[in-house]
Image 1 (tube, rainbow, N blue to C red):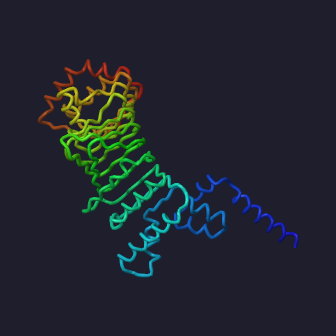
Image 2 (cartoon, rainbow, N blue to C red):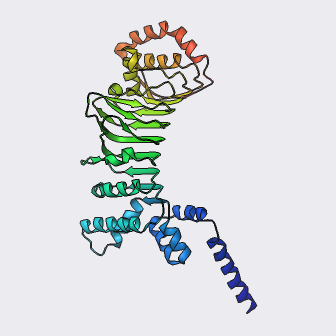
Image 3 (tube, rainbow, N blue to C red):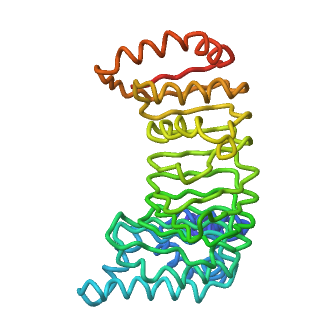
Length: 342
């Protein structure tokens, strides 16, 4: 009898310990659970119901969508989509606290049509981190204009077949990090201006720029450009400290280095430079060399080398390297760490 009493007391003590944890810790616990499992905890007690309804970060991933489809009583595909949308609507409408993070990640593009009202809703409830992942499909999803002027938004990550149409002088007031993948950036005017006064990190991967985009980002320190036509973009500013380029972007930079200087400014504060899939060519070597020579504070160089030599241009390449030897020695003199990978 005594053993049973002790066991009950021990169990109650553990329950009390968990329930007495600070709200922030309980939120962290729930955030590491699938959202459908976190919802079940609302039935445990009045305190847990409050935890669920005030969860600051909401994650709707493929695991949740599979659950929503299986939970639907109708086997029809459209019914499953509608059920998933209804569950998300219910969660948002029953939410009573600020929504600091909204993360939607789907392996299919069938729910893209529901995204606009959800994004607009969270933009009015203190959203700081917004993540949208959709597969590469035939349908292009267009980000709602309202999110571009949301004053609380600090992190925006879009990995989707997306249309990004900032009109002239659009301003993300407090955006610190912006990542766009497989995005079509469309400019309406001859040259649109995108103002990002607080931006520190920018990643543009497999993006297409239609028109000419002028970025105003005085605090930008981390820039990644991969598989993007940067001819219509001015991505390099003097404040950049960490730069990652692919071979295509490097070749385009090499061309831009020989045009009017007002379109391109060397990153004087560059500390680390990463070049992905560097090819053995005069164009890429010359672009890399100009970057190296113009970055007196560079201390780390990371090269991923794709050894591809055009035999018809070997004479031209050797000639260039022989004349550039002194410049190469000058460029490498200040670098403390060099990493070369195949």
